[in-house]
Image (cartoon, rainbow, N blue to C red):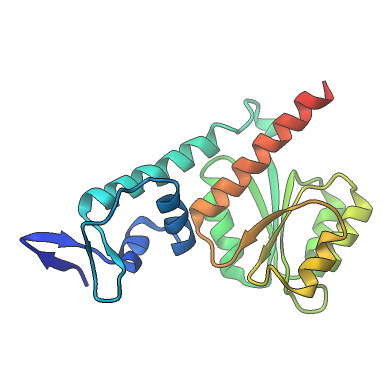
Length: 207
């Protein structure tokens, strides 16, 4: 619930994250980057209280990320990046589709490692997101099999266990991006932007 201090409305961190549509990890990353100044008030637990102006600044930052991500899209329709998301949680796949397709990306989803492997075998994907922990065929093993089919495949690992044995196994297959759970739309767009910028740098280095 909002807090009233001297006829001014203040919001707690969790409320602001819901209002802006970002995760706490994104919120704290933006604080570290200086998007917001020092808080005038804090609650009893020491959490900062935020104003309507703070909320507006965070929404503007979210819009900047969306615009930045849309600007990395290629000009020609046939060059639109194709992205594959393999996660046994259907909500995750839908979040990726909702986040990326409105910015012009084409997104395919799979609910198991087996289905993801079949899709990767049939079609080229510019970027593949793999959940690390899945039944039957985990993300690390799926990563290995995808690299066998396409050594140059670009992969991002989705995980809530960055220090696990599975992550160590995945690292044996080569470099990849990491998306730590929980994440939000902003995290997805920023990861795709990092991939696109990195790809352009690689292309320039090869010229």
